[in-house]
Amino acid sequence: MRYRVLLWTLLAGTAVLYLWDLGDSGWANDFYAAAAQAGSQDWTAWFFGSLDPGNTVSVDKPPAALWVMGLSGRLFGFSSWSMLVPQALMGVASVALTCAAVRRWSGPAAGLIAGAVLALTPVAAVVFRYNNPDALLVLLLVAAAYCVVRALERGHLGWLLLAGTAIGFGFLTKMMQAFLVLPAFALVYLVAAPHGIWRRLAHLAAAGAAVVVSAGWFVVVADLWPAGNRPYIGGSADNTVLDLALGYNGLGRIFGRGGGGGGGAPGNLAFGGETGLGRMFGDAFGGEISWLLPAALIVLAGGLWFTRRAPRTDRTRAALLLWGGWLVVTGLVFSLMRGITHPYYAVALAPAIGALTGIGATELWRGRDHRPARLVLALAIGATAMWGYVLLDRYPGWQPWVRWTVLVAGLAVGTAVAVGAHQFRRAGIVVAAAALLAGSGATGGFAAATAATSHDGTIPMSGPRLPERQGAGPRQAGPELIDALRATTEDWAAATDGAQSAGGLQLSSGRPVMPIGGFSGRDPAPTLEQFQQYVAQGRIHYFVPGGGPGGRGGPGGGSRITDWVTANFPAETIGGRTVYVLVR
Image (cartoon, rainbow, N blue to C red; front, side, top):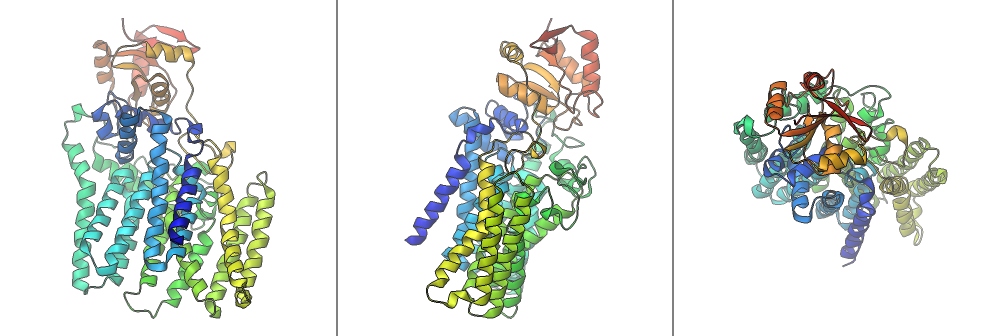
């Protein structure tokens, strides 16, 4: 009964953190907001994740996250709230599933700690209040981990197939990033499932087939669909989902080729900073995810050492392999990848860090009468306090008393644990409570500051409002231009350079706006010939030069379209913006 009360208290607090003043961020990322709006108006746009209801070009990701936001817009009317509330609820569900998965093997206290760490991770307070696809990805990965836990208990194939299906739909959310947990999940089942080796291998093969089917059906449907009746697959080189998965969103992200370059630049916080093993602790990722990362790594190493002689099916070691493998593989890939990388990607590490923290804290506390366990726990507490101070010191203008309080309290508690203060009468409860507060103080305070700050643009970052850590928003249009777009009746109110310019115009006016060149400006959508045909048919009213990536000089067709329009159509000025009238 007490666990249920504490669990519902945690979930209610998480809901408040993620839902409070949610509309303050407006449309958040205009790129995904425009696609969600298009999906709420046109079923083909919804299915393919098109950026506009006219289905010119899709987003450069698969559409699963947009399916949720688009359906919410259809049911409740499209607005900032109908788009963002599902994201916040995904955060609450992720916390609940993390609690449930960890509790099954490590007890209620471990589950509650794991859920609280996830909820209070600053990058989670960004992603679950935003409209990027990562919210759904985290929920699906946590659901898959829960299914693996259930499968391991009795070697149940059905749960393992559900895990594979969840990962497959994770692929339909953010492609190959969802596969980063597969090595850990496969390893833990191969090691700890209660079956013979051949049956374990057969179960893993079946789960792999479930991944392929649940991920591949959309790839097959999209590539078999007549190209003229769907949007161009944004980000692909040949208008196929498979190329998008293997190129721009696959090897291009790892090696920085095939349109996936742009990462690894020192000092470029929005693109992850310099690559290397310390990347998760650096200026770009550190404040997003690394508050309890030292503690998680310490308890992972200590736990694997303490369970080295345990039976093959030992659940504590299996839990460490499951969540630790998730953390290590995903963290290494994020640290070393040379392609496009953004700090908010690190939210994929938060469930694993939370689970390891909860498991390690409870298991080491249970063994506190043994000095090695006590010293590992003390080291984890002290490291958390010192690293929290370092991270907060990077933001000297924000509540300087917090970093000193966290440092002093954490070192004091760590020392008390190391010397065995819990052995004194009634001191154990005080030490345990103080350890929890010292461990969560820095990350919790920073998460609260994040939730209290509005975020917009394509690359949100956690923390209080700091200009150098916020994504650039789109160029805003004046009310006169918006009114002019609303007064149009053509299939597209306007066409403009790039998805960012088009998204702002489409969201503000509620009318379809053609995003020439897609997100990157590399997409040949539309070609000059297609654009000329649309104009001849009277389907586009205005051309609005936006200066976006699809404009002059881009590798797509935008520069040729701009040259043709400026040479053949009259210009007007509406609300300080130059536009070209394409209807005669």
